[in-house]
Length: 405
Ligand code: PMP
Image 1 (cartoon, rainbow, N blue to C red):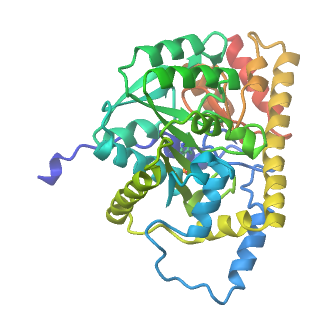
Image 2 (cartoon, rainbow, N blue to C red):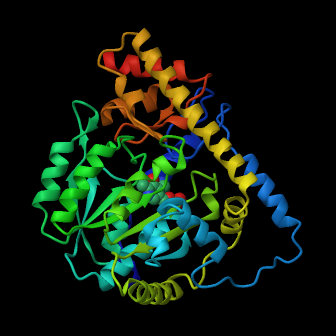
């Protein structure tokens, strides 16, 4: 009977946003959800998105008919160029297939569903500890088992590379490993290129399957190709792999749900036939899940990616966002160092992307929330974009106070 359905917990991030909205303090600061904010703590519609929107509105050819099951081709083609690399051997050798999805979440889900149905290796998916919380439930929901690999080193607040390598070595052959392509959520800690090379070597030896999740291309280094380096490298090494790609953050199209899923097979004479069969199965799954993906966000992205001038304007907009975040990292670190807040704070500027893992405990996070009206997730993650010239000092003082107590 229906009354046996148990109450599910509220999503922690959306719950945090709700608490923030209900707080009436004029000093409140939102460092919770991972969405870019401008220097006035307001959402930012990228100027290039405004332009693309204008172009779309003036196009009399556009209507609201159903799109194709695999999405808008001019979008998926350019999305593939962006993450796989336009000169990727996978594209040249016709061994990649791409489907438009409901943003990054939908791409992770489609990949999870496909692997649950067709992957011949292990049923366990290894995710980093910690990771984006949704990874756990997405993979569990399709019947796969989720386990974790060490990632964050509590003392150095950097990568636990030794622990990570050991876990990759010890996992059964043919395990699936979820890898954040860049700007790891929630820690802001990425492997270096040398470390990626070592990870790839272990994965090759163990025949592990890489599942890349790329939600922040352009946010880590401000350079699109550099942020996709790990994906490019693994493809060059001949891995078969999948990539979930989101345009939520780098286009500021959060609610429009523009994303893409890519599958790449290893080099082989029959690779084009293999990938065509994989594409056909993905299309069947997509049809039963969402029928066909939404048009608007993909049209915006496609308009920008297909026009060289708009493309460079987008890169400029990306630099505005990543640049402001980097400025805030230095500002926060120097405020804490000026205050001589106990502990070391170099990790604030060492970590990259949208988030910083402060190292604050759950008790400290709750205290800052109650006393200073600053909202961050219980694991001590802050969204750097929530900081600006008007609140960074206020936040540093709140941290200073709680650390000294
Ligand atoms: N993966 C990671 C690691 C993320 O941080 C996010 C965004 N929070 C996503 C995927 C997907 O987000 P979206 O569905 O909004 O594209």
